[in-house]
Image (cartoon, rainbow, N blue to C red; front, side):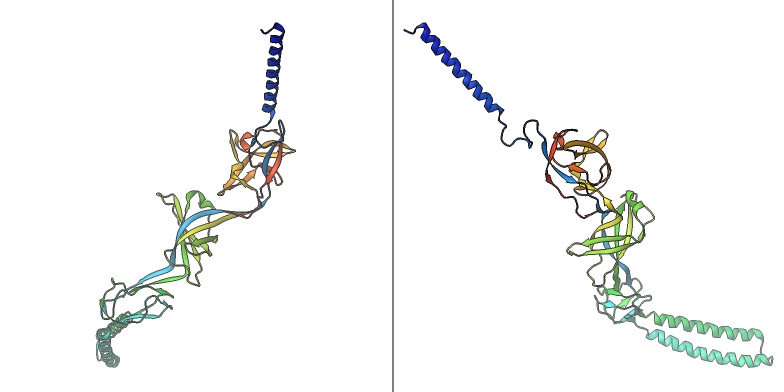
Length: 364
């Protein structure tokens, strides 16, 4: 039989054990969980990644795509109809300006020229006799004028025939590279038939389109960098002409530049990735785009000053792939916070963790 004293002792023991269990449980809850927010303990400053704003060289420009065109291109066609008697070129080769490319049959024209020269000699003799007779009033002035006119007409026919003979020989209009031959010797050709195409490929034209909003940044003489698919080399060109009208369908303006091609690496029709530099700035401040926070007043960044967070409104400019130019709001030497931005508030204590180096060459 359990006495009253014994029961009181058991109850006191149970209450003491419960109290000890409660104390131990409270102490466990006071310990921070592993993997929690970076900081210096309860109420301590947060640890953040940061970067120091540093002025650097920055080039503003326009990215575009374009095509390479020959500087000059002409379809070689005969100026008169006739039988092709000679092909004097090898397709795919380079020729100099004035080089003979082809010849047409000219036997009939040469025979006609010989006949006209005989007629000229006869007409000149008649004109000479008429002149002697005119001096002694042996013939009328009208007869002498008729003979003189006949001599002039024959000489004009001679000149026309000489020009026709010259047109039977076809020459290169400029120095360039020939394409593929499209006719054979012995074929009868006319001015509508193309014999071959000649292209001037040094220099080359680079043609590309720029958005309407960028027109004011363009002017002749600007330098253009571009790359060609399959070539690691970067080429340069110089803008020499701009279209006078914006395309209504694409809202773009056509720009042309000239690029030297002494080694023949560039080919007509190549696709080009164009980088047009419009201006340069030697003291630009660039920061990661992730550091920009949209707010009602515009945009802001979080700075670290004297161990505390300072919110600062900024104005931004040209944006690159991962960085953006800050036009105002940040001065050289300011410490920009780059991590934990959504958890930070103005005046909150922070300490610096990892530092990101922003001093890298930046080109657009």
